[in-house]
Amino acid sequence: MTLTVLLLNACVAFTGFYIISKIYHSSLFNSYRLRSFMIGLLAGALGLFLMYNAVEVNDTVRVDLRHLPLVLLAFYGARFPLFIATLFIANTRFLFGMTEQAAIAFVATFLVSIGMLWIHRLFRERLFIQSLFLNVWALFIISIAVYINMGWSTAYVSLVLTIWMIGMLVGLLSSILTIDLEQTTRRAIEYKQSSERDHLTGLYNRRVWDRYTASVGQENRTYNVLALDIDHFKHVNDTYGHGNGDLVLQQFANILKVETRAHDTVARIGGEEFVILMYDLSPEKVDKVANRIRERIATELFYLNDFPPIQITTSVGVAHGTSLPIKRMVDLADSALYQAKNEGRNQVVVSTYGVPEPIMT
Image 1 (cartoon, helix red, strand yellow):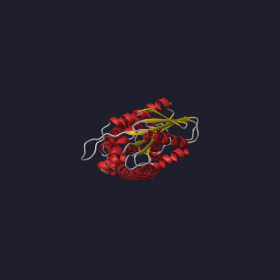
Image 2 (spheres, rainbow, N blue to C red):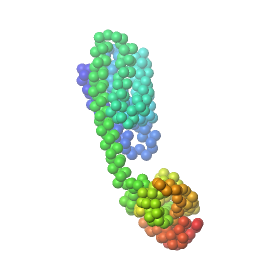
Image 3 (cartoon, rainbow, N blue to C red):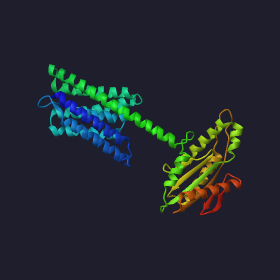
Image 4 (tube, rainbow, N blue to C red):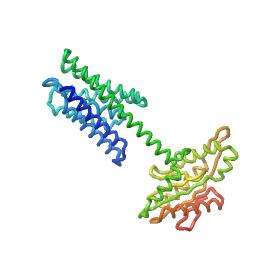
């Protein structure tokens, strides 16, 4: 009977691990805290199920696999969900009676979680070793708790051996499943990023920019498009070499990342051509952002290999409007950029519905 119940718990634990892992890596919830809270509750509910279906050793001692959801959350380093699940599991133990054994289980649950966070920190990148130590630590604390409840006896030794045998088997199999899911997810993220990101600068590439702008409808929102081009970039490549030209592009891209908001879309669409899409920002503020970028580029030192630092400039074309197709906005920004180039470079030109106007030089 003991073995049957533990194996049933193992099957439920496998299913719960898979569901929690999928939610952890999904974008189901926009709010990070809400997602973390839901994961914690789900892990706590899984722990409660495993606790409810525990093996009753005697009238007061129950043994189960409630620690497995905590192992999963510790493996991911999910502190807030782990805290929620630990609190949930530790307190619901008292549903089975306000006893000394329940109090011991309460303390043991928190000791398991605290120790597992420390183990995760030590072996974060060594996934299998981390999983092994997480399970060993949990079973070690459980063994101590059972000893406090039962004392040393033949029954205790037999029970603890069973707990370790089933616990390690189920724990390691669950961990292997989790590691496989984690590695698969990481590879999927890497493939997605490599197909969407410019390999040199880490910005979005032309493919993503075209796809994104094609999907944006004519909403009643203010769209702002900035088109940027590094002035005389061919001279940089010819004088200092293409390797140093790549360094300039990387430093240029880093400045664009710093000077824009996290939800702005920044892309490299050509050799030295960049574009930025900014939503819901007044034209005046966008113009200030454009000129701030231009000034930052003009005053920044760009470091090269085997050469002294150099300074470069950039020309910027800006287009903004409401209820105007994005592709039209891109064309207007390109026209403004072309005018900035023709009028001496190192300046910002704003195009408002087809009438480019230089605003700063």
